[in-house]
Image (tube, rainbow, N blue to C red; front, side, top):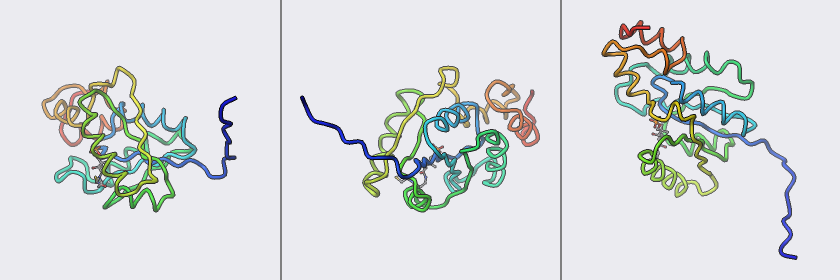
Length: 173
Ligand code: PNS
């Protein structure tokens, strides 16, 4: 026989951080949250406070929308973080960073970020998940552009986000 694998009993819960700008949260993000919540014991959706110089929604608004749309998940919480993601992950006892990859074009940036994070904190693993095909072309940036130009964003964001976009930009429903 070959080697015998010794399985350590699970002593700690698996906490994953799902970081991002979430400006605003889309149905693609939500799809990933639903998948992550099934795999990890606890999923912390972490809103980067200073990721973009000029966000449409301030950090508090982004958190509010995320809290509203993740309410049904008992093992999902929403938080804000500032500074290095690896430091935040350490402060939460998280060993995993969850990121979504939509298309090959995402890969290069994600690889760079994952490698840089690994260099800073070797113990932290980045786990990539793929959203449903229907959301493979979706991004917060395009949703904002669509809303700004008067297009309907109904298919791409949850109703609360649609309302907030309409209030801010006058998007059609
Ligand atoms: O949704 P986004 O904009 O693709 O998310 C990018 C984010 C916020 C995950 C990334 O910019 C980040 O981790 N920012 C925090 C600062 C940091 O740790 N940067 C990585 C150093 S390599």
